[in-house]
Each structure stands twice: as structure tokens, then as C-alpha cells.
Image 1 (cartoon, rainbow, N blue to C red):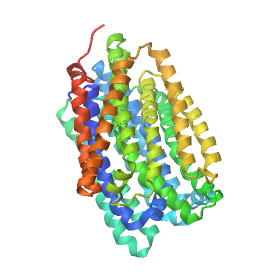
Image 2 (image 1 turned 180 degrees about the horizontal axis):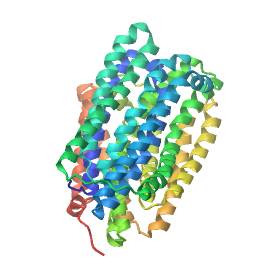
Image 3 (image 1 turned 120 degrees about the vertical axis):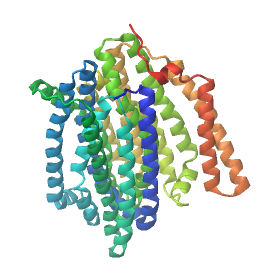
Image 4 (image 1 turned 60 degrees about the horizontal axis):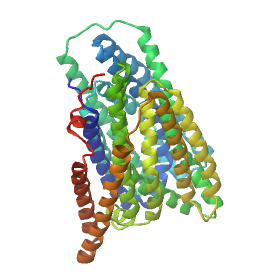
Length: 511
């Protein structure tokens, strides 16, 4: 199986993930129209628990891809196969147990967290998804460890298509029974998408295996212990990151009540925050997730080879990609928050001010994600976990204090996230510098992307205003401005040589 460079792997997985996110918007648009902010609040209350499990589950495949990359460099086919076999033995029982616990204790969880009882139906439906998450994550880890992102990319698109089709149809069919049942129908799309994605990856693996030599796997307890040793802290670290969203689902609705909002108003605000603003924020973050998935096996490979020159090049590439994703995304959502919200949600711009402030957290989240993956690629598993926990503590305190203040309300949660990710990213950056002793070329990594991004956003705002004045159509003006903004950024990236041919090819530089 042919390896892919960091830039190429990120582009393949990133394009697929962005496409999947846009498919997700086609899910959100009709769902928003069917169940509104209130129904979206019911759906989103249970979703962070599911996403926390997804984060925990994703730690095992990340560790798996790291080990497979190292064994693959040594052409140890037996070890690669055993990593897959041992991972499945861990993940499948884990998914079954989590699903059972969520189904059995659903009532208790909702009562303890003081959620609206109408979120129960969505919680029950989404409780059956963990088993499929485990299967998908395992086979994604296998293919990513071989540094080939094609199958992961295709599985994401299939998963999202299943989510959109089944989620919208079920929500529509169940709407006559009530908003809470329609929200549960939307949640079923997540389960259906997971099932379809799992089926694709299993079939693809069986096809790849049938073309390779059949080697008997020799049992080695060392591989399993290495897998568990790497997976546990990565899973904890990923969970701590998503716990920030879970904290919002627990704290925000309760603290909004203390700020003077009714239960219904609280659900509406929370729906605007998570169902609309965070949905749009997650589109550029999909590229960051793709980057992190691609960099773990690639950085792990050169780090294990002690190739300092190539390590320097790849680490600088990681940070360059982080800022190329983070800066223009933050500027675009900040200055076009209202037009983009109106475009995506068919004229419903409620929550655009939430999106505007939330956009400021994007570069910080991306730096946190990439530095965490960098450290874990090099075997420093626990340090980023500690730093994420510290950032999470800041998030909890600030959110708890500010949300109950009517002057801040939902914005208190956003301020808490910005501070939390800022603290974590600073601590991670210090640790990366200490561990890798790699000097970051600030001009290439930060200044160039920032300069190009500023020119782009000035052009985008100018184009939007002029097209809107001429057409009086927000949709046309927004689409043209975004499209030309991407073209302008691409052209300027070539003119200012942000990326080189060597970056795209990804050939090893010898010491």
C-alpha cells in the first residue's frame, strides 16, 4: 500500500472530511427547519456524551496507527496484523459495554444532569452507536498506520451520507408524534451512518487482506502491552478535550436558568450555540482533525529513525498547516458570521453573534490538537493529558461563573473555551520545544499565512458587500465571496511560496 506525504494525506482526508461536513450541513438545514432550536437542543444535550465516547475510542486507533507505522518501517508484517487483531479484541467489547450502560442508566444520567426529560428519546437512540464507532475507529487506525488515508476518507463520506439520509427521513416521519421524537429520529441517522461506514471498512480490509500474503500471526504479549500503554493516555487526552463540550451540556443549561432564562429559552440558546454556531465552527476544524490523523504515523516514523533534519521539516510543516487552516477560517467566520449563518440555515441568523465570538477559538483549538498529536507521536503520552486537564479546569471555572451572569449568559461558555484552549496550547508549545529541540521558522509558519489571510479577508468582505448591493441576495453574495476567497488564498499561497513541491512529494531528507 503506497504511503502518502503529510501534506497529501492531510489534503485527501481533509477534503473528504470537509465534504462530509457539508453533507452534515444538508442534515442540519432540514433538521433545523423540522425541529427548530428547541428540538436541536434536545438532540444536542445527549450528543456530547456520545462524542466523549468517540474521543475515548479514537485514542486506541491513534496508538494503533503509531505502532503500525513503526512496525511497517521495519517490514514486520506479523506485528502489523497482530496490532489489528488485538485492537479489535479491546474495542468491540468496549463498544458493547458502553452501549449497555447508556441504555440501562439513561434515565439516571438525564436526571442527574438535570436535562429536559424530552431529550430521553434521543439519548436512547444514540446509545446504540458506540459499537459501530469502535469498529470504524479500529480499521481507520489500521489504514492510517500504513499512511494511506483513502479508505478513511471514503468511509467518512459514506458515514455522513447515511446520517443525512436516514436522519432526515426518520425525523420527518416521527415529527407528528412530537419534537422530541423527531429529534430522536435525527439521532438515528448517527447510528445508521456508523453502521454503513463500518461495513465499508470491513469489506475494504477483507479485499486488501485477500491480495496480500497470508502470514501466520505469532503471538506477542509485548505488542498488546505497547498498545495499551500508548492507547490509555491518548484516550484520556482525547476525552479531556471533548469533555469541554460535555461540560457545556452539563453546566450551561443549568447556569442559564440561574441567569433568569426559562427551560425553553435555555434549550433555544443552547441549540443556537451547539447546533448552529459549533456546527459551522467544526467545518474548518475538520481539516485540523485530518492533519492530526495524518501526522501521528508520519512524525512517529521519522522520530523513531532519529532523522533530525526530516523531523525539523515535518514539524514546521505541521505548524504551517495549522496556521494555514486556523487563521483564514477564524477571520472568515468572524467577519462573515451573519451572512454565513443566513446562507446555511436558510435566512435564520439567530446565533450569529455567538458564532462571531466562537470563531476566535479556532486557531487555539487547532494548535492544541496538533501539539497534542505531535507529543503523542513522539511517545510523550501523559504530558498533553495533564495540560488538557489544566485547560479544562480553567474552562469549568470561567463557564460556571460567567454563564449565570445575565450580561454574559451563553457567551460565558465561549470565553471559558477560549481561555482553556489558550492555556493548553501555551503549555503544549513549551513541551514541544523542550522535547524536539526544533526551531520554528516564524516567518514561514506564521507571518506568511497571516499576511495572505489578511489580504484574503479584505477581498472577501469587499466582494460580498458589492455583490450583495448589486443582487440583493445574501446567498449569491456569500457563495461568490467564499469561492473567490478560496481562489485568492490559493493564488497568494503559490505567489508567496507557502508550500513547495518538496512539501507535496514528502520525500525523506537524510541526516
